[in-house]
Image (cartoon, rainbow over all chains, first blue to last red; front, side):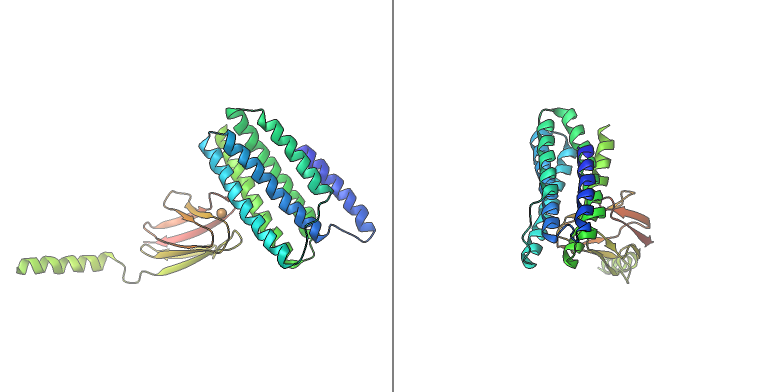
Length: 173
Length: 105
Ligand SMILES: [Cu+2]
């Protein structure tokens, strides 16, 4: 998944450099959509883990993901409403969603400790990828200062989740 | 009767000695996943008022195990400092949130 999304980010970079040369960039409605989608994906993955795992630490981690991403997405929705921005679906959101549903299928076939390890490894990789996209693409492209600020808080949150996932991964070994 | 009063008096005096007269309340705010101030000096017996301004749940967890306070979203929680020491603490949910409390005896 990491490699897949890595490829997406590269494609996105290429696409945006093309777009930039035409005087355009990733728009706020597109950025909002990508950020919201990234949260939704992690909530779905966590709900699968709550369904399948019986490991206490993994379940607690997954509960934290649902709690945090639901809270942030709620803030994001309130912000786009306030700013009269309608999140706009785009190639990056679509690629993220497609890869996420493939990952859900893949993880769905695993059980027990195999599932736990694969879920947490994917959480580390996924948060790394989203952090990279936030830092290099979404935050620099955002025009609205409030949206930029929410993305910056989102980055700190995702970085925290990445570290948390790394701790859980180390405990699972 | 007299000895009873003496005992009571000495109990009151003991109590007065063991509770620091100047126990203070220290406010530590959590905003956008940041503890602030990041470094705080306090004394044993002081109360920390943890003001969580985030819509996210956090914890203030001492690395040495001296305290572990749960901080619900948009709530203020108080805890009393019981042990002296320089304590690095972090959030268990977001381990990139880190800060230090220096607690004098
Ligand atoms: Cu936290």
